[in-house]
Length: 480
Image 1 (spheres, helix red, strand yellow):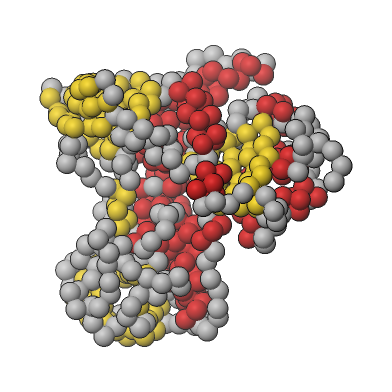
Image 2 (spheres, helix red, strand yellow):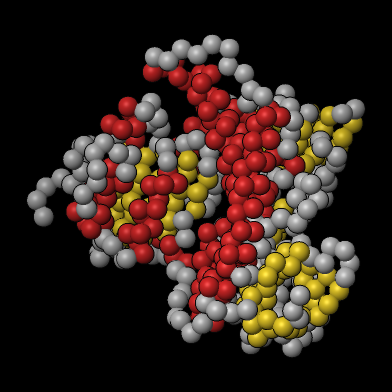
Protein backbone atom coordinates (compact mmCIF):
# COMPACT_ATOMS: atom_id res chain seq x y z
CA UNK A 1 0.00 0.00 0.00
CA UNK A 2 1.30 3.42 -0.98
CA UNK A 3 1.20 6.27 1.52
CA UNK A 4 0.93 8.98 -1.15
CA UNK A 5 -1.92 9.59 -3.59
CA UNK A 6 -3.20 12.34 -5.81
CA UNK A 7 -6.70 11.97 -4.32
CA UNK A 8 -7.96 10.28 -1.18
CA UNK A 9 -11.72 9.80 -0.84
CA UNK A 10 -13.19 8.99 2.57
CA UNK A 11 -16.47 7.14 2.13
CA UNK A 12 -17.62 4.74 -0.60
CA UNK A 13 -21.31 5.50 -0.87
CA UNK A 14 -22.70 6.91 -4.15
CA UNK A 15 -20.94 10.27 -3.62
CA UNK A 16 -17.62 8.74 -2.65
CA UNK A 17 -17.39 5.86 -5.09
CA UNK A 18 -18.50 8.08 -7.99
CA UNK A 19 -15.83 10.61 -7.05
CA UNK A 20 -13.16 7.93 -6.72
CA UNK A 21 -13.98 6.24 -10.02
CA UNK A 22 -14.10 9.51 -11.95
CA UNK A 23 -10.85 10.70 -10.39
CA UNK A 24 -9.14 7.47 -11.45
CA UNK A 25 -10.61 7.76 -14.95
CA UNK A 26 -9.09 11.25 -15.18
CA UNK A 27 -5.63 9.91 -14.37
CA UNK A 28 -5.35 10.65 -10.65
CA UNK A 29 -3.77 8.07 -8.36
CA UNK A 30 -6.83 7.52 -6.17
CA UNK A 31 -7.55 5.70 -2.93
CA UNK A 32 -10.94 5.28 -1.27
CA UNK A 33 -11.32 4.54 2.43
CA UNK A 34 -14.57 3.04 3.72
CA UNK A 35 -15.40 1.47 7.08
CA UNK A 36 -18.58 -0.43 6.13
CA UNK A 37 -18.94 -4.10 6.99
CA UNK A 38 -21.60 -6.38 5.56
CA UNK A 39 -23.79 -8.88 7.34
CA UNK A 40 -20.98 -11.44 7.11
CA UNK A 41 -18.49 -9.06 8.70
CA UNK A 42 -16.54 -8.53 5.48
CA UNK A 43 -15.84 -5.07 4.05
CA UNK A 44 -18.45 -3.80 1.58
CA UNK A 45 -18.65 -0.80 -0.72
CA UNK A 46 -21.71 1.20 -1.72
CA UNK A 47 -22.51 2.91 1.56
CA UNK A 48 -25.99 3.20 2.99
CA UNK A 49 -27.67 3.42 -0.41
CA UNK A 50 -26.60 0.03 -1.70
CA UNK A 51 -26.41 -1.83 1.61
CA UNK A 52 -29.10 -0.48 3.93
CA UNK A 53 -31.14 2.13 2.07
CA UNK A 54 -32.16 2.78 -1.51
CA UNK A 55 -31.53 -0.64 -3.04
CA UNK A 56 -32.69 -3.05 -0.30
CA UNK A 57 -35.79 -0.97 0.42
CA UNK A 58 -36.75 -0.98 -3.27
CA UNK A 59 -36.27 -4.73 -3.43
CA UNK A 60 -38.78 -5.11 -0.59
CA UNK A 61 -41.12 -2.45 -1.99
CA UNK A 62 -41.25 -4.17 -5.38
CA UNK A 63 -41.67 -7.63 -3.86
CA UNK A 64 -44.46 -6.50 -1.53
CA UNK A 65 -46.23 -4.65 -4.35
CA UNK A 66 -46.18 -7.78 -6.52
CA UNK A 67 -47.66 -9.71 -3.59
CA UNK A 68 -50.50 -7.22 -3.18
CA UNK A 69 -51.14 -7.25 -6.93
CA UNK A 70 -51.33 -11.04 -7.04
CA UNK A 71 -53.44 -11.30 -3.91
CA UNK A 72 -55.91 -8.50 -4.42
CA UNK A 73 -55.81 -6.83 -7.83
CA UNK A 74 -55.09 -9.30 -10.62
CA UNK A 75 -58.68 -10.48 -10.40
CA UNK A 76 -59.75 -7.03 -11.58
CA UNK A 77 -58.22 -7.70 -14.98
CA UNK A 78 -59.39 -11.29 -15.28
CA UNK A 79 -56.46 -13.18 -13.78
CA UNK A 80 -57.55 -15.44 -10.95
CA UNK A 81 -54.85 -16.50 -8.51
CA UNK A 82 -55.52 -18.76 -5.54
CA UNK A 83 -53.43 -19.52 -2.50
CA UNK A 84 -51.06 -16.56 -2.70
CA UNK A 85 -48.63 -16.52 0.22
CA UNK A 86 -45.47 -14.71 1.21
CA UNK A 87 -42.17 -16.29 2.28
CA UNK A 88 -40.57 -13.45 4.23
CA UNK A 89 -37.15 -15.09 4.84
CA UNK A 90 -36.90 -15.85 1.11
CA UNK A 91 -37.86 -12.28 0.26
CA UNK A 92 -35.19 -10.95 2.64
CA UNK A 93 -32.63 -13.39 1.22
CA UNK A 94 -33.34 -12.21 -2.32
CA UNK A 95 -32.93 -8.62 -1.15
CA UNK A 96 -29.52 -9.58 0.21
CA UNK A 97 -28.56 -11.19 -3.10
CA UNK A 98 -29.46 -8.02 -4.99
CA UNK A 99 -27.35 -6.00 -2.57
CA UNK A 100 -24.44 -8.44 -2.84
CA UNK A 101 -24.46 -8.24 -6.62
CA UNK A 102 -24.42 -4.46 -6.70
CA UNK A 103 -21.82 -3.96 -3.98
CA UNK A 104 -19.64 -6.53 -5.72
CA UNK A 105 -20.09 -4.47 -8.86
CA UNK A 106 -18.56 -1.43 -7.15
CA UNK A 107 -15.58 -3.56 -6.11
CA UNK A 108 -15.14 -4.61 -9.74
CA UNK A 109 -15.40 -1.00 -10.90
CA UNK A 110 -12.72 0.05 -8.42
CA UNK A 111 -10.45 -2.70 -9.68
CA UNK A 112 -11.18 -1.98 -13.33
CA UNK A 113 -10.54 1.74 -12.97
CA UNK A 114 -7.47 1.43 -10.76
CA UNK A 115 -8.94 2.78 -7.52
CA UNK A 116 -7.09 1.57 -4.41
CA UNK A 117 -9.68 0.16 -2.01
CA UNK A 118 -8.75 0.73 1.64
CA UNK A 119 -11.25 -0.90 4.06
CA UNK A 120 -11.16 0.84 7.43
CA UNK A 121 -11.53 4.32 8.87
CA UNK A 122 -10.08 7.62 7.79
CA UNK A 123 -9.68 10.93 9.59
CA UNK A 124 -8.61 14.17 7.97
CA UNK A 125 -5.55 15.69 9.63
CA UNK A 126 -3.91 19.00 8.92
CA UNK A 127 -1.76 19.46 5.83
CA UNK A 128 -3.78 17.17 3.50
CA UNK A 129 -2.89 14.13 5.57
CA UNK A 130 -5.26 11.30 6.43
CA UNK A 131 -4.97 8.98 9.41
CA UNK A 132 -5.95 5.52 8.17
CA UNK A 133 -6.72 2.49 10.34
CA UNK A 134 -7.63 -0.85 8.80
CA UNK A 135 -10.03 -3.31 10.36
CA UNK A 136 -7.15 -5.19 11.99
CA UNK A 137 -6.12 -2.05 13.88
CA UNK A 138 -3.02 -1.22 11.85
CA UNK A 139 -2.58 2.53 11.51
CA UNK A 140 -0.73 4.69 8.99
CA UNK A 141 -0.64 8.26 7.75
CA UNK A 142 -1.45 8.90 4.10
CA UNK A 143 -0.90 12.10 2.15
CA UNK A 144 -2.62 13.50 -0.92
CA UNK A 145 -2.87 16.56 -3.10
CA UNK A 146 -6.64 16.51 -2.68
CA UNK A 147 -9.02 14.93 -0.16
CA UNK A 148 -12.73 14.36 -0.80
CA UNK A 149 -14.89 13.78 2.28
CA UNK A 150 -17.93 11.62 1.50
CA UNK A 151 -18.77 10.18 4.90
CA UNK A 152 -22.53 9.94 4.31
CA UNK A 153 -25.23 9.88 6.97
CA UNK A 154 -26.77 7.64 9.63
CA UNK A 155 -30.32 7.27 10.98
CA UNK A 156 -31.28 9.82 13.61
CA UNK A 157 -32.17 8.59 17.08
CA UNK A 158 -34.64 10.19 19.48
CA UNK A 159 -34.40 9.98 23.28
CA UNK A 160 -38.06 9.05 23.58
CA UNK A 161 -37.57 5.82 21.61
CA UNK A 162 -34.11 4.28 22.14
CA UNK A 163 -33.38 1.24 19.98
CA UNK A 164 -34.01 -2.05 21.77
CA UNK A 165 -32.97 -5.46 20.44
CA UNK A 166 -35.13 -6.24 17.41
CA UNK A 167 -38.26 -4.61 18.84
CA UNK A 168 -37.43 -0.92 18.43
CA UNK A 169 -35.37 -0.57 15.26
CA UNK A 170 -34.17 2.08 12.86
CA UNK A 171 -34.57 2.00 9.08
CA UNK A 172 -31.79 -0.55 8.75
CA UNK A 173 -33.34 -2.96 11.23
CA UNK A 174 -36.73 -2.65 9.50
CA UNK A 175 -35.22 -4.29 6.41
CA UNK A 176 -34.36 -7.46 8.33
CA UNK A 177 -37.67 -8.64 9.84
CA UNK A 178 -38.03 -12.38 9.33
CA UNK A 179 -41.76 -12.44 10.04
CA UNK A 180 -44.58 -10.00 9.43
CA UNK A 181 -45.38 -8.14 12.67
CA UNK A 182 -49.09 -8.10 13.40
CA UNK A 183 -48.93 -4.57 14.86
CA UNK A 184 -46.27 -2.23 13.55
CA UNK A 185 -45.62 1.31 14.70
CA UNK A 186 -43.61 3.82 12.69
CA UNK A 187 -42.37 7.14 14.06
CA UNK A 188 -42.12 9.58 11.17
CA UNK A 189 -44.25 10.05 8.05
CA UNK A 190 -41.39 11.16 5.84
CA UNK A 191 -39.90 9.31 2.89
CA UNK A 192 -38.42 6.43 4.91
CA UNK A 193 -41.40 5.97 7.21
CA UNK A 194 -43.89 5.88 4.35
CA UNK A 195 -41.84 3.44 2.29
CA UNK A 196 -41.14 1.03 5.16
CA UNK A 197 -44.68 1.32 6.44
CA UNK A 198 -45.96 0.48 2.96
CA UNK A 199 -43.78 -2.65 2.72
CA UNK A 200 -45.09 -4.21 5.90
CA UNK A 201 -48.67 -3.02 5.45
CA UNK A 202 -48.80 -4.79 2.09
CA UNK A 203 -47.54 -7.96 3.73
CA UNK A 204 -50.28 -7.86 6.35
CA UNK A 205 -49.19 -5.66 9.26
CA UNK A 206 -51.54 -3.27 10.97
CA UNK A 207 -49.45 -0.13 10.54
CA UNK A 208 -49.78 3.10 12.52
CA UNK A 209 -47.52 5.99 11.49
CA UNK A 210 -47.05 8.72 14.10
CA UNK A 211 -45.95 12.08 12.70
CA UNK A 212 -45.24 15.08 14.91
CA UNK A 213 -45.94 17.62 12.16
CA UNK A 214 -49.48 18.76 11.48
CA UNK A 215 -48.91 18.84 7.71
CA UNK A 216 -48.38 15.75 5.57
CA UNK A 217 -45.25 15.92 3.38
CA UNK A 218 -44.82 19.68 3.80
CA UNK A 219 -42.03 19.70 1.20
CA UNK A 220 -44.39 18.47 -1.53
CA UNK A 221 -47.03 20.29 -3.55
CA UNK A 222 -50.14 20.65 -1.42
CA UNK A 223 -52.50 19.02 -3.89
CA UNK A 224 -50.11 16.13 -4.45
CA UNK A 225 -49.67 15.69 -0.69
CA UNK A 226 -53.42 15.83 -0.05
CA UNK A 227 -54.20 13.21 -2.70
CA UNK A 228 -51.29 11.03 -1.59
CA UNK A 229 -52.49 11.05 2.01
CA UNK A 230 -55.97 10.03 0.95
CA UNK A 231 -54.62 7.22 -1.24
CA UNK A 232 -52.22 5.85 1.36
CA UNK A 233 -54.88 5.88 4.04
CA UNK A 234 -57.11 4.01 1.63
CA UNK A 235 -54.43 1.32 1.45
CA UNK A 236 -54.72 0.82 5.20
CA UNK A 237 -51.90 2.99 6.54
CA UNK A 238 -53.14 4.65 9.73
CA UNK A 239 -51.30 7.98 9.45
CA UNK A 240 -51.72 10.23 12.48
CA UNK A 241 -50.52 13.79 12.11
CA UNK A 242 -49.71 16.05 15.03
CA UNK A 243 -48.73 13.01 17.11
CA UNK A 244 -45.65 13.68 19.23
CA UNK A 245 -44.09 10.53 20.69
CA UNK A 246 -43.07 11.04 24.32
CA UNK A 247 -41.94 7.55 25.29
CA UNK A 248 -41.47 4.01 23.99
CA UNK A 249 -40.93 1.13 26.39
CA UNK A 250 -40.33 -2.58 25.86
CA UNK A 251 -42.17 -4.99 28.13
CA UNK A 252 -43.09 -8.66 27.74
CA UNK A 253 -41.94 -8.74 24.13
CA UNK A 254 -44.06 -5.75 23.09
CA UNK A 255 -43.48 -2.05 22.61
CA UNK A 256 -45.74 0.41 24.37
CA UNK A 257 -45.67 3.88 22.85
CA UNK A 258 -47.00 7.01 24.48
CA UNK A 259 -47.71 10.11 22.42
CA UNK A 260 -49.60 13.38 22.54
CA UNK A 261 -51.99 14.64 19.90
CA UNK A 262 -54.76 17.22 19.69
CA UNK A 263 -56.94 15.22 22.06
CA UNK A 264 -54.32 14.71 24.77
CA UNK A 265 -52.14 11.82 25.89
CA UNK A 266 -52.49 8.51 24.02
CA UNK A 267 -50.91 5.07 24.14
CA UNK A 268 -50.59 2.20 21.66
CA UNK A 269 -48.96 -1.21 21.83
CA UNK A 270 -47.00 -2.71 18.93
CA UNK A 271 -45.07 -5.87 18.15
CA UNK A 272 -42.37 -3.81 16.43
CA UNK A 273 -41.55 -0.11 16.27
CA UNK A 274 -39.57 1.60 13.52
CA UNK A 275 -37.89 4.93 14.25
CA UNK A 276 -37.74 6.81 10.94
CA UNK A 277 -37.31 10.47 11.87
CA UNK A 278 -34.62 11.31 9.34
CA UNK A 279 -30.85 11.09 9.03
CA UNK A 280 -27.87 13.10 10.24
CA UNK A 281 -24.41 13.60 8.70
CA UNK A 282 -21.86 11.01 9.74
CA UNK A 283 -19.05 13.41 10.60
CA UNK A 284 -18.20 12.16 14.09
CA UNK A 285 -14.43 11.44 14.27
CA UNK A 286 -14.03 12.38 10.61
CA UNK A 287 -12.05 15.56 11.26
CA UNK A 288 -9.09 16.15 13.54
CA UNK A 289 -9.44 19.22 15.72
CA UNK A 290 -6.77 21.04 13.72
CA UNK A 291 -7.97 19.95 10.26
CA UNK A 292 -9.30 23.45 9.59
CA UNK A 293 -12.52 22.23 7.98
CA UNK A 294 -15.65 23.97 9.23
CA UNK A 295 -18.73 22.12 10.49
CA UNK A 296 -22.06 23.75 11.25
CA UNK A 297 -24.24 23.24 14.33
CA UNK A 298 -26.00 20.23 12.80
CA UNK A 299 -22.81 18.42 11.87
CA UNK A 300 -22.76 19.29 8.17
CA UNK A 301 -19.40 20.14 6.61
CA UNK A 302 -19.38 23.71 5.33
CA UNK A 303 -18.76 23.97 1.59
CA UNK A 304 -19.30 26.42 -1.27
CA UNK A 305 -21.42 25.85 -4.38
CA UNK A 306 -18.68 23.64 -5.83
CA UNK A 307 -18.27 21.55 -2.66
CA UNK A 308 -14.94 23.11 -1.66
CA UNK A 309 -14.31 23.48 2.07
CA UNK A 310 -12.40 26.37 3.60
CA UNK A 311 -9.18 24.33 3.37
CA UNK A 312 -7.49 24.39 -0.06
CA UNK A 313 -7.50 20.93 -1.59
CA UNK A 314 -10.25 19.55 0.66
CA UNK A 315 -13.77 18.96 -0.64
CA UNK A 316 -16.92 17.39 0.79
CA UNK A 317 -19.86 15.82 -1.04
CA UNK A 318 -23.07 13.90 -0.48
CA UNK A 319 -25.07 13.53 2.72
CA UNK A 320 -22.43 15.18 4.89
CA UNK A 321 -22.97 18.58 3.21
CA UNK A 322 -25.94 20.91 2.70
CA UNK A 323 -28.81 19.98 0.44
CA UNK A 324 -31.08 16.94 0.18
CA UNK A 325 -29.71 13.61 1.33
CA UNK A 326 -30.15 11.85 -1.99
CA UNK A 327 -27.84 9.34 -3.64
CA UNK A 328 -28.10 10.95 -7.07
CA UNK A 329 -27.33 14.41 -5.70
CA UNK A 330 -24.24 13.07 -3.93
CA UNK A 331 -23.05 11.17 -7.00
CA UNK A 332 -23.31 14.26 -9.18
CA UNK A 333 -21.35 16.25 -6.59
CA UNK A 334 -18.65 13.58 -6.51
CA UNK A 335 -18.26 13.62 -10.29
CA UNK A 336 -18.31 17.43 -10.33
CA UNK A 337 -15.45 17.66 -7.83
CA UNK A 338 -13.40 15.05 -9.71
CA UNK A 339 -13.76 16.92 -12.98
CA UNK A 340 -12.99 20.29 -11.41
CA UNK A 341 -9.76 18.80 -10.04
CA UNK A 342 -8.88 17.96 -13.65
CA UNK A 343 -9.45 21.53 -14.79
CA UNK A 344 -12.98 21.25 -16.13
CA UNK A 345 -15.77 23.60 -15.00
CA UNK A 346 -18.91 21.55 -14.32
CA UNK A 347 -21.51 22.58 -11.75
CA UNK A 348 -24.43 20.86 -10.07
CA UNK A 349 -27.78 22.52 -10.72
CA UNK A 350 -29.43 22.26 -7.31
CA UNK A 351 -32.65 23.66 -8.76
CA UNK A 352 -33.26 20.48 -10.75
CA UNK A 353 -32.61 17.76 -8.17
CA UNK A 354 -35.46 15.21 -8.45
CA UNK A 355 -37.16 13.90 -5.31
CA UNK A 356 -38.99 10.55 -5.22
CA UNK A 357 -40.99 8.65 -2.62
CA UNK A 358 -41.39 5.00 -3.69
CA UNK A 359 -44.82 4.32 -2.29
CA UNK A 360 -47.51 3.15 -4.69
CA UNK A 361 -48.52 5.35 -6.32
CA UNK A 362 -45.10 6.95 -6.37
CA UNK A 363 -44.61 10.61 -5.49
CA UNK A 364 -42.01 12.65 -7.38
CA UNK A 365 -41.18 16.27 -8.00
CA UNK A 366 -38.55 18.64 -9.30
CA UNK A 367 -38.29 22.38 -8.84
CA UNK A 368 -40.54 24.42 -6.59
CA UNK A 369 -44.11 24.04 -5.46
CA UNK A 370 -46.87 26.50 -6.22
CA UNK A 371 -46.94 27.39 -2.53
CA UNK A 372 -43.20 28.13 -2.37
CA UNK A 373 -43.44 30.37 -5.41
CA UNK A 374 -46.41 32.24 -3.95
CA UNK A 375 -44.39 32.90 -0.79
CA UNK A 376 -41.64 34.32 -3.00
CA UNK A 377 -44.12 36.58 -4.76
CA UNK A 378 -43.73 34.87 -8.13
CA UNK A 379 -46.89 34.72 -10.24
CA UNK A 380 -47.44 31.33 -11.82
CA UNK A 381 -49.83 29.43 -14.03
CA UNK A 382 -50.47 25.73 -13.68
CA UNK A 383 -51.79 22.78 -15.60
CA UNK A 384 -52.69 19.31 -14.37
CA UNK A 385 -53.85 16.03 -15.80
CA UNK A 386 -55.20 12.99 -13.93
CA UNK A 387 -54.05 9.45 -14.66
CA UNK A 388 -57.73 8.53 -14.55
CA UNK A 389 -57.89 10.08 -18.04
CA UNK A 390 -54.76 8.28 -19.26
CA UNK A 391 -55.47 5.41 -21.62
CA UNK A 392 -52.27 3.59 -20.66
CA UNK A 393 -52.92 3.95 -16.92
CA UNK A 394 -56.49 2.70 -17.28
CA UNK A 395 -55.36 -0.24 -19.41
CA UNK A 396 -52.87 -1.14 -16.69
CA UNK A 397 -55.50 -0.81 -13.92
CA UNK A 398 -53.23 1.72 -12.24
CA UNK A 399 -54.83 5.13 -12.64
CA UNK A 400 -54.50 6.87 -9.27
CA UNK A 401 -52.84 10.28 -9.16
CA UNK A 402 -52.03 13.19 -11.44
CA UNK A 403 -49.30 15.31 -13.00
CA UNK A 404 -49.06 19.02 -12.21
CA UNK A 405 -46.93 21.53 -14.10
CA UNK A 406 -46.07 24.95 -12.66
CA UNK A 407 -44.76 27.69 -14.97
CA UNK A 408 -43.88 31.36 -14.66
CA UNK A 409 -46.98 33.42 -15.49
CA UNK A 410 -45.03 35.84 -17.66
CA UNK A 411 -42.22 33.88 -19.31
CA UNK A 412 -43.89 30.42 -19.30
CA UNK A 413 -40.59 28.96 -18.02
CA UNK A 414 -41.02 25.69 -16.14
CA UNK A 415 -40.58 26.20 -12.40
CA UNK A 416 -41.86 22.90 -10.97
CA UNK A 417 -43.22 19.53 -12.02
CA UNK A 418 -45.06 17.31 -9.56
CA UNK A 419 -46.26 13.75 -10.06
CA UNK A 420 -48.36 11.35 -8.02
CA UNK A 421 -48.92 8.17 -9.93
CA UNK A 422 -47.57 5.02 -11.55
CA UNK A 423 -43.88 5.24 -12.51
CA UNK A 424 -43.63 8.80 -11.23
CA UNK A 425 -39.92 8.12 -10.63
CA UNK A 426 -39.45 7.61 -14.37
CA UNK A 427 -41.80 10.36 -15.56
CA UNK A 428 -40.05 12.98 -13.43
CA UNK A 429 -36.83 12.44 -15.40
CA UNK A 430 -38.53 14.05 -18.39
CA UNK A 431 -39.36 17.04 -16.24
CA UNK A 432 -35.76 17.25 -14.99
CA UNK A 433 -34.43 17.28 -18.55
CA UNK A 434 -36.91 19.94 -19.60
CA UNK A 435 -36.07 22.18 -16.65
CA UNK A 436 -32.33 21.60 -17.07
CA UNK A 437 -32.62 23.13 -20.54
CA UNK A 438 -34.83 26.00 -19.30
CA UNK A 439 -37.81 24.77 -21.28
CA UNK A 440 -41.19 26.46 -21.19
CA UNK A 441 -44.52 24.74 -20.70
CA UNK A 442 -45.13 25.45 -24.38
CA UNK A 443 -41.90 23.61 -25.28
CA UNK A 444 -43.18 20.51 -23.51
CA UNK A 445 -46.57 20.95 -25.16
CA UNK A 446 -44.95 21.07 -28.59
CA UNK A 447 -42.93 17.92 -27.90
CA UNK A 448 -44.34 14.69 -29.35
CA UNK A 449 -44.97 11.93 -26.80
CA UNK A 450 -45.59 8.30 -27.78
CA UNK A 451 -49.15 7.02 -27.43
CA UNK A 452 -50.29 5.30 -25.32
CA UNK A 453 -47.85 6.05 -22.51
CA UNK A 454 -48.00 7.26 -18.95
CA UNK A 455 -45.77 10.17 -19.96
CA UNK A 456 -48.61 11.62 -21.98
CA UNK A 457 -50.02 12.85 -18.67
CA UNK A 458 -47.01 15.20 -18.44
CA UNK A 459 -47.64 16.36 -22.01
CA UNK A 460 -51.30 17.07 -21.29
CA UNK A 461 -50.49 18.89 -18.04
CA UNK A 462 -48.02 21.09 -19.92
CA UNK A 463 -50.63 21.81 -22.58
CA UNK A 464 -53.06 22.60 -19.80
CA UNK A 465 -50.86 25.47 -18.59
CA UNK A 466 -51.88 27.37 -21.71
CA UNK A 467 -55.40 25.99 -21.89
CA UNK A 468 -54.56 23.65 -24.77
CA UNK A 469 -55.08 20.20 -23.25
CA UNK A 470 -56.74 17.84 -25.71
CA UNK A 471 -58.05 15.10 -23.46
CA UNK A 472 -59.76 17.17 -20.80
CA UNK A 473 -61.95 20.26 -20.69
CA UNK A 474 -59.82 23.41 -20.81
CA UNK A 475 -60.68 26.29 -18.52
CA UNK A 476 -58.51 28.55 -20.64
CA UNK A 477 -59.40 27.19 -24.07
CA UNK A 478 -59.27 29.58 -26.99
CA UNK A 479 -57.02 31.07 -29.61
CA UNK A 480 -53.72 32.71 -28.72
